[in-house]
Image 1 (cartoon, rainbow, N blue to C red):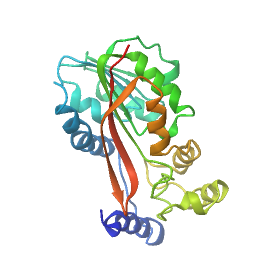
Image 2: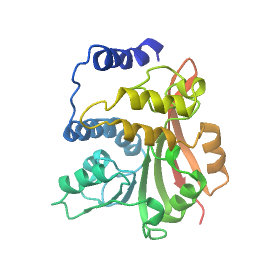
Image 3: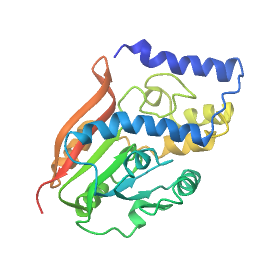
Length: 252
């Protein structure tokens, strides 16, 4: 991928918001619709080549506004776990009439999961924020049926946007150049990005990063009984900025 194509949108938004002081207004529905589009392209398409996406028991860890759930809700039983209160509230409201969808506002490690129960688990943009990634891998293994799949994607810490602060500081590898204290101070000084993305949320996301790299993740998977059956990435100059894979439970 061309670096300018990756960098330019963030620079453009940064100038509009912080220099020109334009009001870049979003709402939760817009975020939800964007999540649906992203899920169709990046989650459904890879999974459709591996399994029939009907009649499944699905667990979505960190379901956010429910974009993936919207794409998969037809003929499936889905449980979405979301730690963020506002996102969980939106998802609960949106799916309130869907009897086959359950949204729970809690920590995944506090939720009472059944062993050998799920056909598919989704963990999108979660692994880099978990204090113990291996513990999550163990949880996924225990919860999957034999032959079940898990879709994973995350932004590696050593990637271009590993800081997750590109809307505030569109500088590649800013987390490698500036201290956590300086990055936090800049975000606080700039203030809320818009009516949905606020400074405190971005700071929380930044400070929750566990510095997970792709190699570290793959090593943790290798030490489990899960198998990486497919992996791909988005990269620039051979530097991965988004990693994707599908895991399968092959051994009990």
